[in-house]
Image (cartoon, rainbow, N blue to C red; front, side):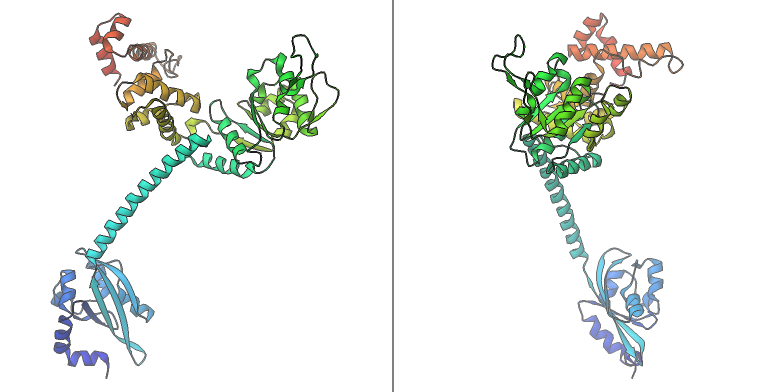
Length: 465
């Protein structure tokens, strides 16, 4: 006897039995048309038995009674037991398990058992939400730990993808003795990259000698780099002097602003790198050296080479592994992170509890930072020193950034781009902001500019400050 015939002959008895069960029961024919549904299933859906009988599952999905998919349809399609988490149109979720019953190789009926898991799903949602919150706290703790480690280890603080790649590159080449040239604008953090490379190298425990080539007078560069023997020239140390290359022997030599070296020193530097030996001024015998060289510059050395200001052979010898550090204006996501990093350092140093508000972060992000990270560090320190209270606001940032006494880029434009009145208005704004920033009270600023306090207030309101 077919299952469908047995169901038809014993419909009332079977329905009575199914109504006693604490799970929902659906029975459809082989074409997914509803032939029986118990009371428990009616309670999860919101339609009456009369409304459901004879309806096809695909139709119930189309009307929104069942959302997205049906385990019955999946079981008919696959010919095997199927289970899904099913969302109901009236709200709620059920776990639905459908089993096809075959007669003579064809699906005769499909039995679907469903259990209401709405409360379980709500609990699962709350658990997932709690997991998300926990993950946020964990990420924040990791970020703070990373900042603390960065402060201790002079590491790289960044959320920028390009900077993360630079960090990965620095870690990768740290273990090699290859020469590295780090390029980028002033204040971008080239020395931080050099520190990262050295700290992760096999020479980490050996000397790390840093030299700012631009800070050494040209007349002293050779003696500073290579040293000199005693009695070499008048006024020299009577015992002679060890040069920076010898001091760095076995370790790492970092030549910052290498583009400032004069040509005659460049040739001697090239020889020292290639031959791995130097000769002191006044000395006869060469001295073997074993160093790892890291150089940095804010100049375009290729352009300097074409102009004849930088030796081509030294250029190609240095550019083994070039790393270009992007300016801060091209990695704005790092600005709030770095600002808070510097702020935390200052808070710890001076026992403060200052915070940077969101509107202040936005002002910092909107600034172009021609001085890059170094300028940002100085601005944060200036804000900490000059701002009253524990909250650094967007207004205070604007005063700090615009109160330098210089015309902003917009204010200094002339010609057809701006009228005289708009230029004068912008200049007036800069003057007022500078006075308010320096005096730290409207009354004092008014006295300095020889105007009424109401004029200062009106001007600030006019500027949207």
